[in-house]
Image 1: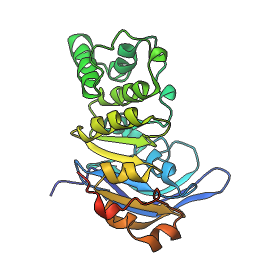
Image 2: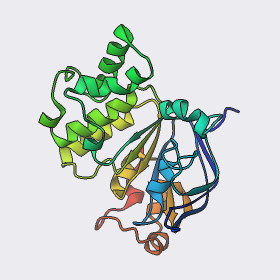
Image 3: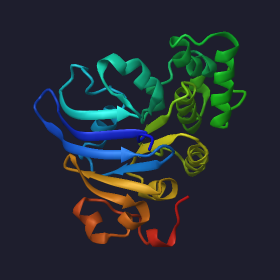
Image 4: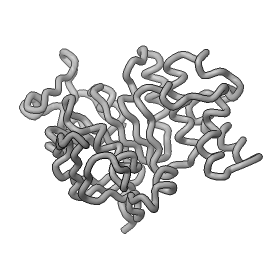
Length: 255
């Protein structure tokens, strides 16, 4: 059997001030899977995903990590960070944290150019990534002239241009209007990569991710089909999760 796209074993983490955020997380994500990471504020969700491409752990010098994270067969260590960060692309909650060049094309080209991709291959990657997020022809546009939803999709394109195996998104639907939310959902369901999505938006998780885990108190409290977890009223209440009024997850299917 081929290795999981992502494998986490015994992951524990304490911040420099001594606050323990993770207490031994075990998690496998299969290639091509779409997984939602759910949980209350302070549960450790962002701390977990920042370990997946070595922003935390992997000898970062920030806090204390124990356990192991692997991307496919590759351990997330300081020696492997360059390849790990190519394979695992992280889309931050605020797209303006990721977009800093004068044009959209330059932003999308930035990552692969730093890996040595040049010329026609670089141009192809930029065009292909923008087409994947339904922004073909936006290469010469200024990011700050785009709508918030368009900027978020450009941020996704900056990751896709690296040709990753895994895309990790932190609160992808936050601050999006209904149309932008739908447009991003169409992009994410069309990606031929593994997707891990941290979100408080439970209907979005239900729509996009067949499987979810609930992270609570730094441990995984539940792991299973999204609709099944969200329909468990006792589980939801125990971890301070609430669905919108009258939304029945059992009546909705995930792709």
